[in-house]
Image 1: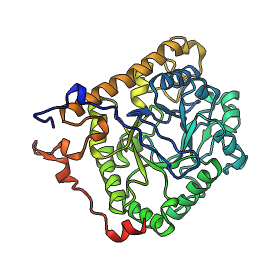
Image 2 (image 1 turned 180 degrees about the vertical axis):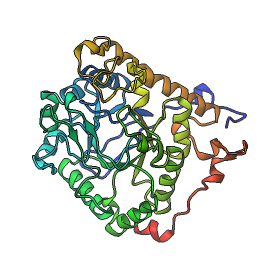
Image 3 (image 1 turned 60 degrees about the vertical axis):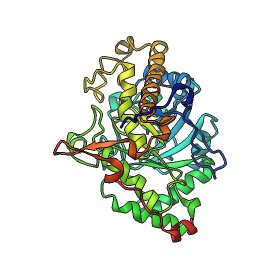
Image 4 (image 1 turned 90 degrees about the horizontal axis):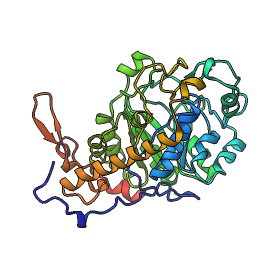
Length: 390
């Protein structure tokens, strides 16, 4: 929704940083508008991880490790890293698959590891754990993950120790207590009523028990290795779930305490600007950065035969993926997104992307007419009782 008096260039501002985990021992205050979502070493190749790590450093954004553990190639570029803890606890697991406090401390000791994300589900396959075929489990990958080389690596479809909201908060507190760094969780939203119950549990325990962030993934996410019934049919899309999550947190007086990260096919400036209008604090993308590496959507991600070298460990197929060249493309993608999102923000009269609001957006309905987003999703009222308690 452009305005009649757009923001002049001399009045434009850089989007300010947002602090995540202000009460932790090591808060994190990034300013990046778009960041690299979870893509693990094993699922993608060594040169792909190197290119993403180096490109993220050049662009000033963070890189999420995905569930495959922390590799030397994630650390190579010196970028900020979000370590993801998947259901199999790769990289921080005991032999029986339980969480290892000692290994968790080792990961947290790296200065560039800024946050920890507990993955409940992802858009490609909500309700199903990760699958890495044995052909892709090299000795190095097995060592990083803490598994057996050459054997299929199948994650549980949820964390065995997390069966309810109370246990989720317990796990978040445990990880945060060991690492001293901001800790949150990633989930595809489906039966969203549990969010109100989660907020009620947080309020009962006190605001320090809250996750420092929630990453909202879209039910229409996907990779070439995902089961089609889940990828095509299960979970709410980001267009519906992001406003619901933001409103739930606001309704319970927790919006300032818990930051929101939006994920799921947000790969153009318009997509990213929409997310900021809807109320997100940050945007992450995997697909967009895959395209920057040269992904052609061959849908061979799990077959170790990716023709572009991104998802294969066949060195012959990797020859076209030069980390030095591709890191520049990663940086350029971030730069183009930043430029385009701010272009939209200025047209709407906002001084920077984080100043976008729901009033700046209209949503096209099935009848072809559009409705203002702040009408469809009106500002939530916070009860004084909740605000006082928090």
